[in-house]
Image (cartoon, rainbow, N blue to C red; front, side):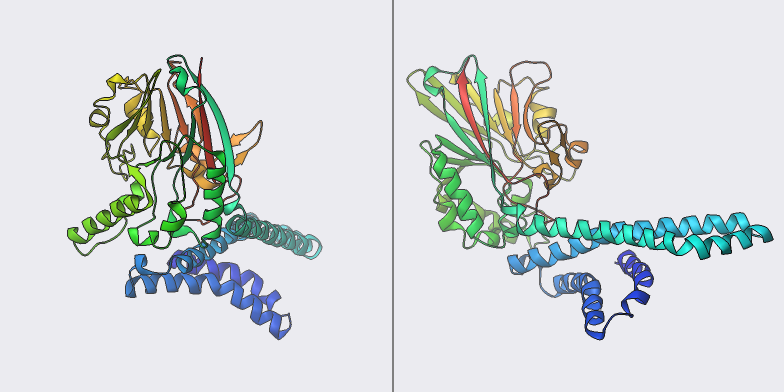
Length: 413
């Protein structure tokens, strides 16, 4: 908080002279907008002490946090340019101290070039900051709900012929507490149903903090339909670990409410267990584990050995595991007989560049497998698909990495 206040005053000191040259109403508007994020941040801090964060209205909480994050991110570039200008100015002064001729030369340069240089740095900072501001607000209000259906066809030599063309829709990371309207989610559900999938798989993080975020979404999510049903697993956010509960009993009650919600909407939750889908030519095992993350901050509740019991009879095995690091650190090193793993968690950082020739996101510096389809480096024929998420967390928007609905079609090779 202290750092943000100091940064705000530092930036304000460079623009206030210009602002006070404007008309009174424009001056008031600029001052109000400039200090709005600090005011909202104070509301967040003080308000969360008075009323627990999980009891806030989800839409209000999402917007207020989003606005604070957007404005302070946009201020980083102007502040950086100003700091750079100050450093250059200090270095110049260090080299001219005690040198009369150099002091005269600096004064002359200031008269000729100084204003232009300072203005250039100022304009560069504010133009870049403005671009960041505009882009991030567009990401909040437009790209956050620009759903993209990504299609993959994956071949398996031992896939039973009756499963050839089997359509799997994967969705992940709904984070219901970050949705500011139910209409976009209804649109996403309609897109999924239009695919007419054989099965729908949700790979965790239904909520941000607590189960009360699910209120009002039963009708929409219960509309998801597939021939063999809708299955789900838990993500790290679903356990209520990011809330200071008054007691263990309250935390357990939150989990019981989450289990009840899955029952209400007709999604079968797989907690370290499996489901066998049988056809005439063979069997497919759907395996679901609880969250297991390599990072110390994330719970390790996933028990793959327990989850696979009884799947020996299956010809093909599909694993649902929220965190892709589970595949990298446990499934592949353990040589588990799992053909395809489905994960989420990374969100693709909700920011990046994806074109035909470029695939980049800060997520790649944290996760080896962060978005899309990957094959085991040993070319063992084992795959993992990492979904980019349908919702958002933290920044309530998307830039470059759009919310994803995945359609995977199994094929016999």
